[in-house]
Image (cartoon, rainbow, N blue to C red):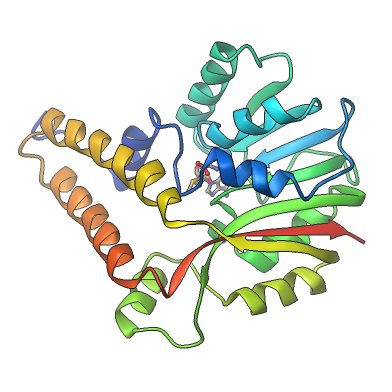
Amino acid sequence: MEDEQKSITDLIIETHEGLERQGPGSPEMTIKALSFLDNLDEISRVMDLGCGTGGQTRVLAKKITGKITGVDQFPGFIKAFNDNAKKSNLQERVTGVVGSMENLFFQKEEVDLIWSEGAIDNIGFEKGLNYWNGFLKKNGHVVVTCPSWFTDERPAEIEKFWADAGSKLDTIGHNISILQKSGYSFVAAFALPENCWTDNYFIPRETAEKALLEKYTGNKTVAAYIEDEKFEVALYSKYKQYYGYVFYIGKKV
Ligand SMILES: C[S@@+](CC[C@H](N)C(=O)[O-])C[C@H]1O[C@@H](n2cnc3c(N)ncnc32)[C@H](O)[C@@H]1O
């Protein structure tokens, strides 16, 4: 295994496809966000964009009665998503499809709820909210988590880290204003607590990384990838008062 060539994308998929989540979050916070919505029933159409292996989708599916379609770009995640739905006996109402969040296959104004945890920043908060708005029915909801700044000023090291990762973070106030300019009325916003990062994401990821390191002993790409992931964890510990994931909930006007 030592010399096997692996891309960073391969390593991200291999580390994450067996995990409950692929980013920070928790069942409690998914349920808290859902508590702000009042107009769902068994004919509601729900989309979970950037669904990963569907940890949050299954939490949603146990709380609501409508059908949920998960969309993710990685076939390995969608295979795990559909296997997990079957194991939870949710396969009649929960289906994962490989696709792009930027090129959706739904009809215009077909959807009651667009859910997306930890994924919208891959295409940009404003771009995602504007594009997804067209697929929602009037009074339909958008519920997303997005990494956001908690302060107006930040240390240069953490700003550089997120810029290098290709994510443009904004403050919560700025993001609420974007939501309001993108065809939604503001419903709620709240930050995820620290255990969503640590207990629910970093700790299970570290276990998966340890197994990866053993499987690819001596592989320099794998070792460098895991060092980068450790750096992310160290930076979170150092700078967590400056940033975090925030749930934003809007209702289409
Ligand atoms: C941080 S993970 C979050 C996964 C899951 N929602 C969760 O909270 O555990 C982001 C997910 O978005 C997916 N993703 C990123 N860009 C995408 C795109 N353009 N189209 C579809 N999926 C995308 C990734 O494959 C990944 O599964």
